[in-house]
Image (cartoon, rainbow, N blue to C red; front, side, top):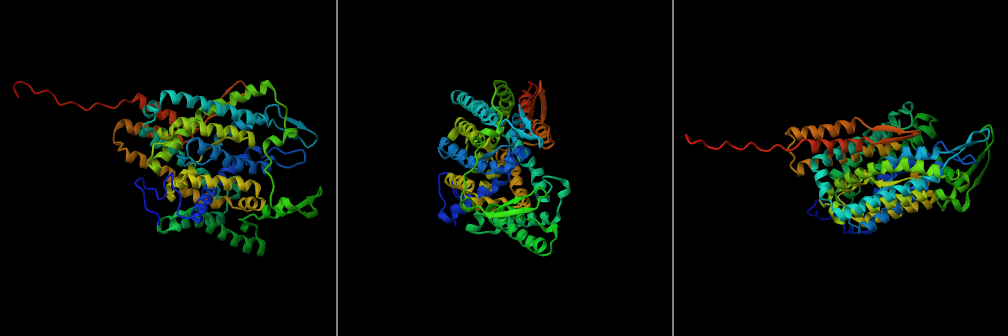
Length: 501
C-alpha cells in the first residue's frame, strides 16, 4: 500500500506507482472519466452534417477528437515540465462558435439537401484561440500573478469551483436517466445500472485497500457495464423487449461487418472489413478538403468575432480549474510551473486539436476529480492515459467496445465525480478559514452560486454574429466585481480612555 504524502496524495506529481500494472489501470481510469464528454462535442457539433456519400461527419471525427486529446495533453505536460497533472480534451464552451462557423457560407447541394459545411474555419478559429492564450501568457510572464491573487482570492475561487461541479449536475442526470437526447427516452433500467456503477465506485473508494482503492472508477464502471450487459442479453436479445437494450452492440458489429442497404432499408449484402476491422487511421479534419466550402476573408473575419471573445472567457475557466487542482494536490500551480506555462500549454494544445479534429482542448474537471478521489497525481500516469487515448483512435476494436459504454454508466459515476468537484470548493473555503458569517463573504458567495447554478449566461449579437458567455464565466466575473466593490471592514478600535477614567 502506498504511503500518504504530506499533501494527502498516495502518489505525488513527480512519482510513479509501484507497479506498471497499477499505472496502466490508473491511466485507463482517466480515459474513462473524460471519454463521454470528449466524444459528445463532435457528436453534437457535426451530427447534422453528412459527407457526399451520406455518412455523418460525427462518426468520422470521434477518433480524431480522442487522438487530439492525447496529443494536446502530452504537449501541455511537456510545456508545464510534468508538474501539472491535468488532462485536456474537447471543450463544450466552443460548441456554439463551432456550429456557427460551420454554417458560414455552407451550401446545400442536390435534391437530398446535402450540406457542404465550412470546415476550414474551425482550425483557423482554434489557432486564433491559441494565439490569444499565448499573448495573455506573455503578459503574465512579465507582470507576474500577484494581481491574479488579488483578483481571484479563495472567497471567489471556492464558490466558482462549486459552480463548476454543480453546473455539470444536469449532464450527469441526463446521462443517468438516458434523457441526454430526448425526455421520451427516460428509462428506469438505465438509472438502475448507473446507480450500480455509482455505489460500487463509492464502496471501492471508501472500503477498498491497495489496488482497489486506487481504481474505484474503473471497477465501478466495469460493474455497471457488466450488469447492463446481462440485462441487455437476457431482456433484449433473449426476450426481444426493446426496453432492455441498454448496451448497444451495433458499433462492435459494424466494426467487423460492412452492411449495404437498399432504398427500402433492407440488407443487400454484408462483407468482412478486413484489416480495417483491427487497425484504421483516424479521419482527421484536413482529409475532408473536398467536403468543405472554400475559405474567404469574410469568413475568417467572422470566425475571429466568434472565437476570440470566447477564448477570453475560457481563460477564466482555465484559471478556475488550475486553482481547483492546486487545492487537491496542495501545490500552487499558478506559481509553479506557472500560469504562463499552463496557458501556453492549453492554448497551443487547442490550436493543435483544431487542426486535427476542429475542436478546442480544455482542462477537464472529471480528471481533476479522479486525482482527488484516487489520490494519485502522477503526471507519468497522465502521459500513459494520453497514449491510450491516441491508441483508441487507431485500434478499431477498442474504439468499438468503448463506444458501447452506455451513457447511464458514465452518468452514475459522474454523480460522484461532479459532487467531488463541488466539495473541493468547500474545502478551499475551509482551508483558507474564510469567515462565511461576514456580510461580504455571504454576498460574494451568494452571487457566484446563484448566477452559476441558475445558468446566467450572457447572449448577444453584433450584426448577424451571435456570442455567448457561459454561466460559469459570468458567475466568476460577478464574483470578482462583488469582491472588489465590498471592501473588508476594519475592526472597530476601542475608544481612547478619558481623563476621568
